[in-house]
Length: 318
Image (cartoon, rainbow, N blue to C red; front, top):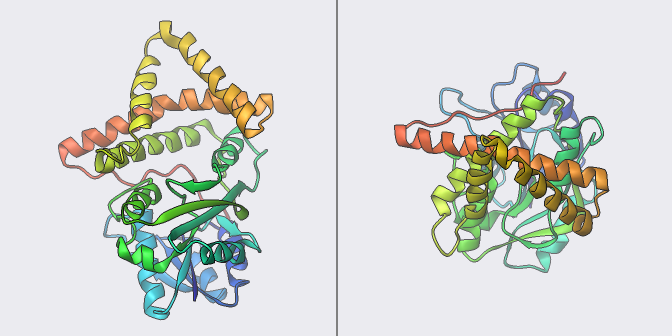
C-alpha cells in the first residue's frame, strides 16, 4: 500500500536519520536512489532494508530523474502500491506524518498530493538555515505546488508520467502544474511532516540556492507561462526588474522600501518577530539579483541549445 522513496548523494548522518525514520514504517517498501555517493550511502541504505537504485551517471543527472527511477523500482517490487512518500536524503519523516496524510487522502478523492510542515533541524545554526525554515512555512489549504517532501497518490503520479527528468530544479511545481491541469488537487495541511538539514553556513551557498531558484522560475514559466496558468509569471517579472535595478545605485532606496514592505507583511500575517521579518524581507530583495542571473542563464542556455547541469549548494557530511 505504501512506498517511501529517498534520493541522495553523500548525505552521511543526514541519510542515516532519514532511513531510520522511514524504516520505522513496517508497512512501507523503501527505495533509496543514489547518485554516485562515495561515503558508503548505498551500504547504509541496504542495512536499513531499503532497495537501492544506483543511477547511471553517464546520463545527465537531475533530482527529477532520480525520483522517477526510484518510482519505477518501487512499482517493480510492489505493483499494488497506492501512495508514495517522496523525500530527500537530508530529511527525516516525523512519526505521525504518514498516518495523518493518509487520513487526509481518505476525505479528498481528488487530492494527488498532500504535504505538511517541513522544518529546519538547526534553524539557529545560521541566518541561511533560518531563512529556509521561514520559507518552508507555506500557507495552509489548497496549494499550487508542493516541495520535495510529499505524499502522493500513485494513480495521479502515473497519469501525468511523473516528474519531467530534464528539469534541473523546481521539478515538483512543474509536475504539480500538470497534475492540476488533469483535474487533481494539491493540499498543504497543518501537520508536522519532515525535519530538513539545509546545512547552509556560507553566503555563497545561499547565493547558489537563489540562483537555482531563478533558473527554476524561468524554466517553469517557459514551459507553462501561457494563459490560463501563467506559471511563475509574477516571479519572473519581479526578478527581472528588481534584479536589474541592483546595478543602478540610485534605485537602492527602492530596494530598502520593498524589503520593509515584505517584512511588515511577514510580521503581520506570518507571526514572525521583527528581527526575523526584517531578515526575510531583505533576503527576498537581495535574492532577486541571483535569481535574475539564474533566469538569464536558463534563456542563454536554451538559445545556445545547451542543458544546464544540476546546481548544488550543499556539501557532504560525515
